[in-house]
Length: 601
Image (cartoon, rainbow, N blue to C red; front, side, top):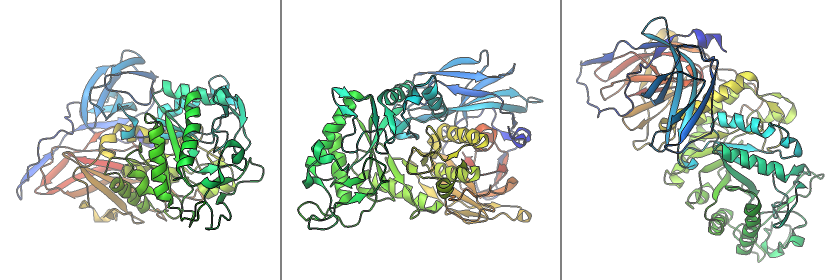
């Protein structure tokens, strides 16, 4: 445990706090004073480990909790935003809670004890709970990529999925699980191969695939199988794939477009026209065989980005993005109850994919043509526009990519947390967690590992994204705005700018959610570049910022100011004393490491 976190004393919300349902704002007259002078002081000693039996829950469902090392006199408190909805003494280290009836809500559960007096409390542990009847509202996507018989050992799959469950992963992509791209099922519909080889000639077990699905379903997760929308191996003709379905590099039926793979793999991948209706029907039949033998919930559709000019068998130029939309429509028509997600590689085809209305969420694999933090925001805004603001965004963003390509070792914690902080503050999420942490586009590769510090921090970040999902990821009816926030102590030499980020200062990203003004403060002090990728794993942690006096221009009359951060106190709400003179709101932010959220109600 970080000793600094245990010792830092800051301000927190009292149990009597009301929630985000504040009365309508009234505008203070010039010179009018307003404020809150006394709040409960908060410190943390995060010694209690918490877990739940599922990654997400339906309204009214029973949530089962387990805790370890709970001291006498502790209480459990349930919050939605700043609102305490229930609190009770701890009588057991295992207990249940009936999820509220409101759909699509995030909650933070806190284990607390009194401090030295009635104005102090200590946070001992926290965990989030997502109450959502459908995962598409707040997708938290993970993956699995190794399916050999070793995964059938006692507790192997259960332990892997327990970590994903602790991070509230509600959907899992099965990468490179299949037999052939054009024939994904190992064997025949009525004669499945129990042991088979994948594209890389790895040994796979059908029983391992089934067990992953079964364990994930027990945890409330969705299981999604991966495949290209247009891939065939070199033996595809024997399996009924016709020459007329392929995509060619010229209009004279010359070279087939091909994605070259290593010579010791089964085959390179030949590209077909995704808009060809016969190919669509062929692959839909193959998918039907998959669904008949494996209890998958849907299909993760992949592509290969912009392939340049391609032509069909008759010499007509192929419109790949239009073909993607046609392919999606065909897959949904053939299996209307199954979920669909499609990759927009470097945003290629993103508009056509999202506008089908058949995606569970937007999925963007980002590369060096979208390398900056500002590009992540642009992608989210574009996806919002393409989908009519109905779909959230998941980034397949491979961290420490160059380091992972040349060596084994550990992920660079500051690089990972800075990227996650920005993605989550912007309302997105990051595909990164699975049977290992992801660093390469070949998902089975695992050259880098998480150390203990990163593993613990990742849990806090995913708790935070889940607990505050309504402030982070709900549709904002009033939208983003540039906030006027300044450090009122010139001697601290802290520059604060509105989005996009600048090196050397603090950056705000702000939006209105209901009656709350939500301000994300991201720390780019001593950050030497503005790329999310941290290619070589060399990013330094930003300079810690303590006790920063802030002045905010706020037109309404504030009733409460609070902050929360995944970097402190397990993400618990910290209410802040404030004063307001006219439209000038002043308060002190106790600490900023990577990311703090400030909420004005």
